[in-house]
Length: 504
Image (cartoon, rainbow, N blue to C red; front, side):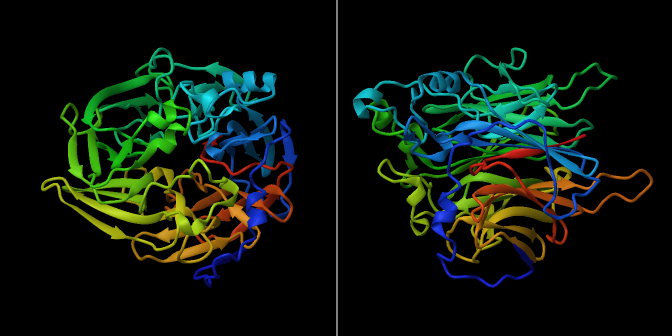
């Protein structure tokens, strides 16, 4: 594993597909508070807190594999940093579906991304039940750890033991089964108070977006408690909304409505999963939906709808305001990437799937015009900025990237990109390592000392190590991308989705 400011681009196929495919597996054990030592380097003593990761931990049951890894049951991994050491725990989320299928020893539910129950189309037709798999993200809110899956309610977990407390409706904020995004954004305090900002979508010929803001910490002066709902609003928009992510600024919640059509008939007839019924709409127009936040300068105003560039976006990186402009950095795909009903996800041809490319859109709030700029030609995903810069102008972003400079491949490297100069620094896990979402952890501020620089801190990432068929935790210096420490975990964790770091 190496770090280089300007790596040499290898040829396509330099990775071993068997190494990559070996990362798709079931987790067979649950560990509790196991001490982990660094196999290389030293764990920084200033790192104090817990890295939580969520992702599919079971991809097969009773000999039946999921059609897409996103249909796998959620499992939380916790890596607790304390006094220069790390302790590891992992737990499956005891959802209703997980418990029922564990007891039955076979799949009982269909999956959103194409997984079918045994028995073919006749066994799946008109069965529209969806298993809440709680596998997409994990965040701390109040006394609960929330395991998120955007099609339904969150599951509450004990932050220390990871035991499942059950479905939560957040003290009555949600209705049973109501959609709750798996992509909250944490406002670092633009209006004097940290907030978790999130949303839910009710789709149809018109789609309704419910924007929610929660307190992150107790406020003795006002009596507000962590996890308490502070504000909400609902807005209706024309068209079917497929919204996985959004961005925030002090005044706006920024959504990009992809030009997507949904034909539910193959899902109803048991031929496809719901997500496989999505397709780019020929001649469709993507739109930015700019929803005023209730804590901002435009509170109470109607949303602004502005035409957006062509392409498909799963994830945004950050957004900020510059006078009468709103700047949004996102990862664009040329088309909606999907895995068809007859395709094995472990044998996909990366050359046939569009790669994600980093772009910046500058929206003129006065004229409604949009200027788009490509920031990098390197395939990327899972990008983030320093959490203190959420909603503010940020100079640096950290992301998972392919090893070569152009073309689509598995993600095998981590990149720090200077969004002003374009300078990049890359740490590589190739040829036998494969990366997941990096989490940037800022260095804690010290009383009486200057504030840490924007890129002062660490990047934490769980790596699939094909050489030993297990997972590693890599700690990098966020400024230089130099390797600080590597921890070989006694656990084989399948490729995950999202995670977060909780201080303390």
